[in-house]
Length: 187
Image 1 (cartoon, one colour):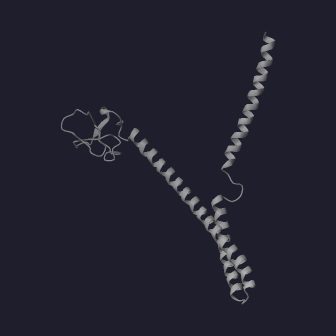
Image 2 (cartoon, rainbow, N blue to C red):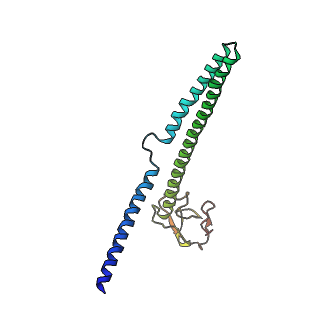
Image 3 (cartoon, rainbow, N blue to C red):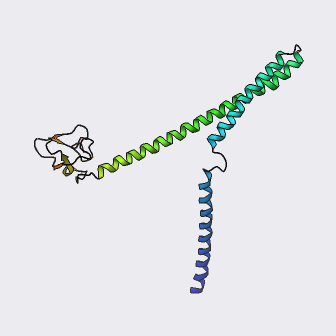
């Protein structure tokens, strides 16, 4: 019986190895999706729009010049078609490429600001868990007041954050009013 188990475990091991190899190739392929080998997409859109838009304007001007300097209608039509229509199409495509460049810049800036905001919020969230004065946040027993103050604060309250000489105060202590900024009794 042990002889029949060994080949099946070998087959299962080979199948696991093949699936791991496939997963590794898939992982590498997915990581490479966001990368461009040449120019970044926003630069490519900027360059293409910067070439096509002025080229379209030039073609429109050449078409107008050719059509305006001949009295024959059969000579004006090719100028209007080749210069005017092709130039208008290039101006439209170049404008859309510029618009695409602008959109990619807006998305990049929005992502940068979102990441910055998330990092600031993480830092602010971390400031509430550990303060420099030895007081810990959370619960009614973690309330603090300044040495001579009569207001209850959470340790992460902006009014007392980073101050030295804070004293621990319980929520039921008489003569203290809750801070309206951090609302220590609200939880």
